[in-house]
Length: 388
Ligand code: ZN
Ligand code: ZN
Image (cartoon, rainbow, N blue to C red; front, side, top):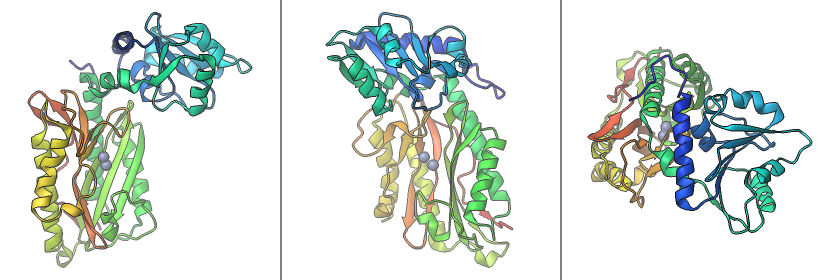
């Protein structure tokens, strides 16, 4: 059961206490003395602390045989204590002063012997990793993703609820943009509106804002610039933000007429839009627990290949999403890992005709017992808009 309602700001302290206990159990089961987690998604998942990535060390220490503690710069203590799990006392705060060596505090917490196994978060700065290696000579270091990655990959009901709220906010942002003025504006100007709309519709912040007009829509990661959007061409919008830490990510490709029916989509554009829509549907239909991630990619890709556009779909079908915009599981050939109930990921096939235009249709789905739970609700029909 989820306890998230539309006005909620996030996940409560009890859920974090459970996660901390599961992480500690996972460390113990793996024979790891401690998880050493710096600023990043693991810290956020375990404590709710969205810490600033500073040059000063912040390190959550989840030891197999001790209560969790977080080493925090003195000037960040108040921010750390505002996080649900830390404020609730589930994590002990160990502040270090400006003139201290924070590695001394980590040493006091662990006193790891040579041969001990210590698992560091995947994005911990190299300078901190080297500092830890100097503090615990002879310890064996590994990545914490191997210990807690699977715990974080599978989303619980609260996380799915937050992903759904973010998805719906992104849906409204896309549809709002589609209904507004587009012709005669630069991509950069529309991108600024994207950022505003993402926040106005319920995100805490905007994360990315691909606005690709005309031939630019054939470039999957186009950077919006001063090109002016015209009537008689497509506009690809791939946008997302974060709400209570959880990400949205939606793509829709519109056609802009400027109010002149003679400037409607040509037959090729209609054909590839329909093809991508069918591929998106085939991908969603293939989702079910136990199916290999690569088979979902295959199901969507088969549709595009059968129409002769295989070479024009040159990226993976999708990526996991949660506290990170891109995380496990990746829907790509070669990933034989079976989908699990609670996996959240994108389905985003595309067909890109270099120099002409491209189409991508992206939704976020959660793997449920009976198949895909599709979080995005914005129509996947071709939106032909006036844009004036
Ligand atoms: Zn996207
Ligand atoms: Zn995506």
